[in-house]
Length: 111
Length: 111
DNA sequence: TTGACATGCAAGTAATAACTTGCCTAATAT
DNA sequence: ATATTAGGCAAGTTATTACTTGCATGTCAA
Image 1 (cartoon, each protein chain N blue to C red):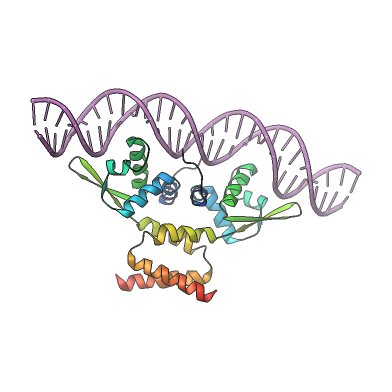
Image 2: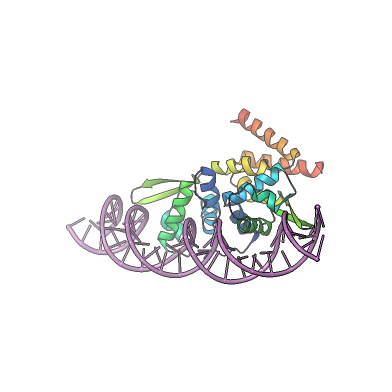
């Protein structure tokens, strides 16, 4: 069963694979990489990497821009925030929940 | 490939399935439930639920206590904190990273 | 002390996910 | 112009995961 209905599901599924997590780490270390660049770090075929990147893109964790014959990949950390709100903050002890609220308030005044 | 080597992998794999996330939600709503209790909410065989709970237990998200012929299930939110540190805080903008440090400092003095 | 209840074990099936291979198109550099 | 480089598409294969069924064991209540 396990139909990937909502974004939450795509997101967790995207994070469930170590190769995809490595890709996120690579983009975190240096943004705007090409497909070939990323392939050099992964020990699998180019298509394998492409398919992982497609999943990351479906989960909105990676955005891409075509530049000539190259495709540049950028990290988008926003969905991770959603995980935090739904799965970390919610399950924390009340004390930490209070801190989460504080954090959000600070974000609003700061931005 | 995708060998489940470390705890991180078990954790993300555990969270990747909607039924398992539902189980966590159920335990969050009310802790110490029996297997049969949890089964009533899941629309699959008892064994299916057992296997999901086994994975959650392997990821240390659920702990169990045997009580007579019943098995009680308890939620352990600690591993979720690890995800936060490694995957949320790390990928946040520097401003939010600073807040994460603050949070940890507060935790130490508070506990 | 027996019958119903709560759960465990093991093997099998079906669905999904990860990965590969081969060929195709478009951009660039010489 | 043409060879090379970057990437896309589509099928097929293998591995993993989700789930089921049938039977076994321990616990409790009457």
